[in-house]
Length: 383
Image 1 (tube, helix red, strand yellow):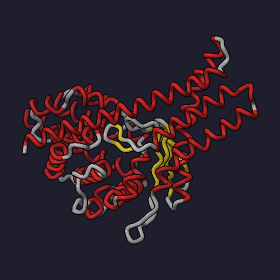
Image 2 (tube, one colour):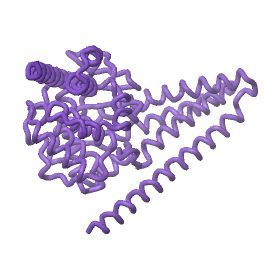
Image 3 (cartoon, rainbow, N blue to C red):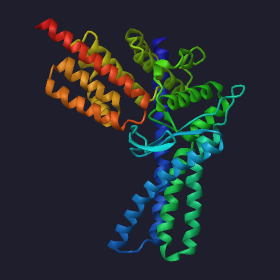
Image 4 (cartoon, rainbow, N blue to C red):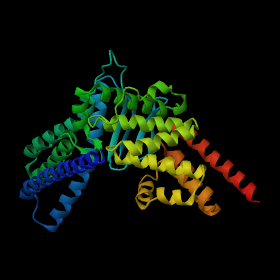
């Protein structure tokens, strides 16, 4: 059995590397073809090279915006309701009928459009156009830029570059691939079309996000919403989506302060789900570290969990309120450093101001208060 598992793991890693190589080869070829195309029309001078670079940067920013707006338009046409839209770390949420600006980012993503899905009818709801709308909008704008190159021939190099960027961005999202365990739009659409379990998982993810963004606490959502009874975490086709539901259930347990169950679920997921996206694995490791800090607070266990890779992840996700809550607990309960704890608390409060998911803030403040209570109790015992 162990030998079979080892062979399976080696085979899976080999396939993943081959797929990654194909992905990067595709991007290299597209980039090379695009570069060769625009070089023909690029003004042959240092100033022209600078202009080319500026248009390249502007084009990437533009197509990130176009991509997310494409999801928004496709979602609205499919019956979805707007929840939030993000360009890089600039996020807009809808609150009391108004757009509110927040700051947030997710590692490995340049943007995101999250919407509330329509209620399923006989288990069915529209998903394809919502998922594919971003890439299709990139293609539409690329066609527009190619058309403009004929209208304004003196600026043909610029419009060609903008068009090529759009084609590359569209293909990256529409050609079904996974990166870091996370599926792109094309992979999602393909999987959802043939897998009703994945469809149910996506509906749960989007609906839960809509509820907590609008102020609902996770703990107030019925347990059935995160039930894993019908989900198979070993199914590679829906693994990322189902794993997301499982991680959300772990967060639900944290919000209910059912810490023993939350720890058991986190450990179980990390030990049994081989193909969980990296970002979800790191989220679980962060929560295990926090649970150790508020629990036995054993030095050897904290050193085992708080690896260099996890430190880098926490730094990269510094806008996330839960990460600042973790660092506050680390400074307060493990380092016993009031100065570091004060810095972490200040960062926590600043993160709360910019965090777009309103329902998470009250939960995080309760956990910070719990850390304070534990620190006070610890100090009284040692006094």
